[in-house]
Image (tube, rainbow, N blue to C red):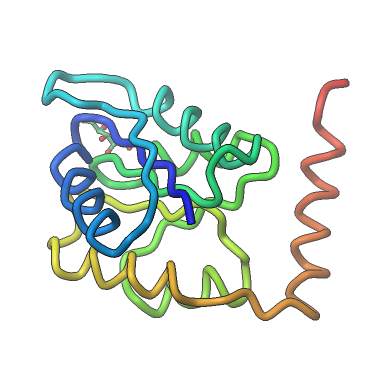
Length: 150
Ligand code: RB5
């Protein structure tokens, strides 16, 4: 599985730890930055992660900023993205089982590293349940389609 990774300066430190964890676990990683502690703009990295997943270059993505809030808003603007900001393992499991989240969003200034990596592990290992949940995702897609410019 190929994972797109992206973070602003507020998520950089956690991104590096997630990256190391993914590579050790045998995942292929595409790191869209940021690569320095310099202040930068989270929408840039949300868009890069979202597009790589939406275009099919990566299977899933992980996007990180300070709180997870801003990059969550940005990544969810990309059509086809279901980005889930998770602060615990239950949310990570539900975001896969019920929402088929294709991008996990984390807050680097909110989570300790151990918890963040447990969230990543659960999120990667949990499968979508389909059935009634697919119907609800189709309704989300209908909203998206209604507002897409041709
Ligand atoms: C950057 O200081 C911070 O605003 C950003 O990382 C994020 O938390 C925004 O939602």
